[in-house]
Length: 212
Image (cartoon, rainbow, N blue to C red; front, side):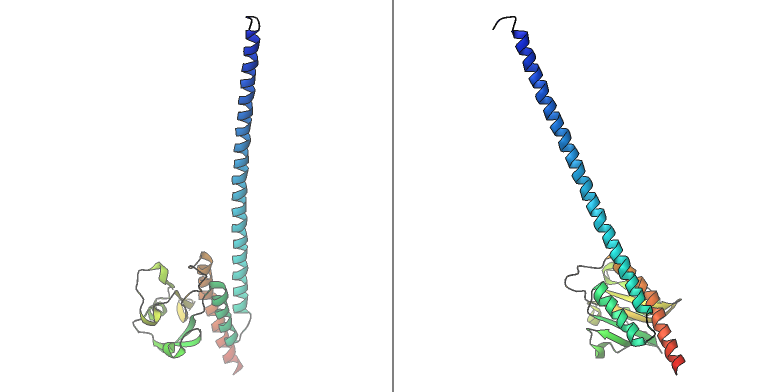
């Protein structure tokens, strides 16, 4: 190789090296851009799922509220309460007790032994009596209290209140097998039952009295 051609060959090598490096840099830029687009797409998809779930939850809350206030018949209100617990919360073991004359009297149930739960003294050493006295919702998974006997499979007690007066208590026991635990919307349903369920039951009693 002559001395005259050596600089020319070196220039070709340098240009080729720079060209390859530019291709590598462009490839990395495109890779980073694609990764960013994929991440953004995952975020958008996750947000879409979240919004869809929120819409579903709102629709369920609306339907539940409508079911409770769509009738003045006591049996239909109780059926609406059961449908909310079975279909929306996900439990086929439940009871509704009315507070009356020092007792919690079972007025409706699903999947429970009615004889075992028929009437509970308001002063009994049981969680349902404590909830009736305190007016506070009890969720078993939020406490270290060990429940025993007929309450050992309890998921939650929800007091139905008019102002500060507890007129009834809903008991929700074993959840359906496919449901791992309570979700935020379930607690919203508890709040809905606590207020709207109480109002609906009270209105049925007023309607029954007016009809006599």
